[in-house]
Every structure is written in C-alpha cells, then in structure tokens.
Length: 407
Picture (cartoon, rainbow, N blue to C red):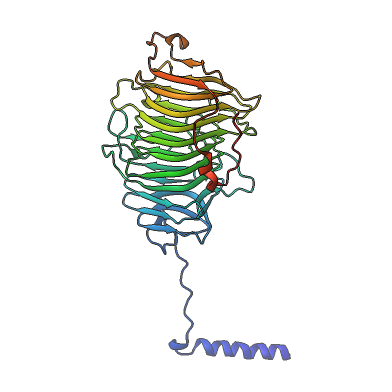
C-alpha cells in the first residue's frame, strides 16, 4: 500500500507539471536533417564523413582532418568545384559499379596534394581487391576525334567539344587504388579515366595501383600528364583513344612478379587514333608525345604487347625502356603497330631500349594481320640495353617500393 501511495503522489506531480504555463513547457526535439542526395553547402547533411555520396552543386571541401568514406556516386556538377585538401584519405566501400567519383563537364576537382601529404583514394575493405570500387573520372570539353561530343563508356554523361584549353582542375600527388569495377564484359571502370579533358587541367604526380581494368585511359582531349606511376592493372597500364593529343613525361608502368590476374590482352601501352577503330576517316586522330617511359613485365602472365599503337594513332616516343624481368616474364610482341582495323600513323616515331626482350620483334607488316592494309612505314629505333626510361625515384611519395632491378 505504501508503494501505491507514493506512485499516486508521483502522478499528481506529473499532472501538475503538464498544467503549468506555456513558458515552462518543454520544447520538442527538432527533426533530424533530411538528406536529399545534393551537396549544396559545406554544412549540408549530405556532406557526411561516414557516407559520402551525392551531387555536388557548389564549392565543397573535403578536409584532411577527417577520414572520408565514399559509399556511392559522388558527382561534381557543372559550375561546382570539389576541393580535396592535401593529406586527405578517402576510403571507398566495396560497392562495385555504384561507387565512384566523377567530375562532369563544367565541374572542377582541385586535388592538390604534396609529396609529404599526398591524397589517397582507396578501398575501405579489410582485404582490398582490384575492382572494389569504380574509380576517378573527369569529363571535359576538349576535342575528340571526329568532332562533337560523345557519351562515356560507363555513365550517361557527355564529354568532348571545341575547348582545347578547357580546365577541369588539378590532380597532383594523388593515388587511387583497387579500382576497375566491371559493369559487364565490355564496360568497366579504370583507375583514372580522362574524357575530353583539356590542357587547362593540370595533372602531375599521380599513381593508379592494383586496378581491375586499365590503370589510366584517355578518351580524346588535350591534357598533359607528368610523373605517372601505373602498377598491376589487370588490363593495360596506359591506354589512349579517340583523338588524345596531349603529352606525357616520366611514365612508369609495371606488372609485379606476384600479380597473376589474367585478361585477354594486357598491354604496357595501347594507343588508338579513333574509338574502337570504327572511324578511320575521322579528323583529329590521336597524336601523342611521350618522353621518358618505362614499361616492365616482371610477372608470370604474358603481356600481349609491350607497346601497341594502331588505328590511325600517331605518336612520338623518346627515351623509352621496355624490360622483361624474371625468367617467367614474357610478351607476345615488343612493338606492334598493326591492327585489322587500321595501323598506326606512318608518321610515328619510337626510340626505345629493350632489356631481356627480342628487340627485332617489331610488327609493321601487313602480313602480320593477314589483311591488305599497307605496311606501316613509321620509324622504330630499337637498341638492346638497360638505359633510359623514367626516373622511378620521383615516386617515393606514393609509398610503393616494388621497383624491380632491370639488368
């Protein structure tokens, strides 16, 4: 009975409180912020450290003091800028094709790291693997072969145009890892994909490691890339197509001894003049200049070609070194300038040193492809040795230390 009496008193107190003045009444808890998939300001609830995704429509900064988790598509829209501070780490959930970062035409990315504080975009998985997430894509307004615009391979987004000096921002001291999620057998993400990116964009000191398709691919555009390290891509280390006319300097591509992923035709370089060889009459075919290039296969999986340039592409490559390292490393071809859909430009010029590879294995003859295409008459100057190539010491900032000894 005593307990009942006390409970009754408590009820009276509660009722009295509820009947007090409005000034004393408790306020209700405000509703939690509602996400709408759009990041419109720095304090927008969609700018979520633990669940980063959505359409960026204004100037947004990812600060280095926080570790960001990318859980879906992050798209920088026309007129917006995504700034990523030096030293920032972004970890992508292993969500496959639904997790990626894309800069759309008119948008910008300012990812300006430093050698002591690089920017890293990697997998969040405890046991990371190639293909855990999509990758980094930039869409610009620079020309592509045939003129006009086109739609990206993996997303319904436009690229190309007439603005050769288009500016999509800065990539400097940036590493991407475990990219290359596959949509199907014909469509897949790369580590870094540059669609019609213009020369106003500054790209230097980049690395794409352990991807499930190409490490880096250019679809047209005029952008230059300096100091690029590409390691253990399942397909090509460097790939260009559709009229890329930029310059490359100090490129190092490597397949390490313990990387055993198999694809149909992995290459050190795969360079096309027009998209898939379907438009040989297009104006504005690829015309590339590369100085200081190293391509190494140290793995047990055979490369189809160390250098494959075809389908109308022109290239001037100087100070190149191509090497096989280890007794099991092989390549079908040293240099191949032939293809059933069109050979490389007859103006092509390649100066290359070969280490532990047959430097006479240079394919320019029409009979190699069994077609009536005239033989390629470009210039390939090959010597045996270990000199030349890229300076691997500039990639210390990446943390990668598996550069093989070439001898």
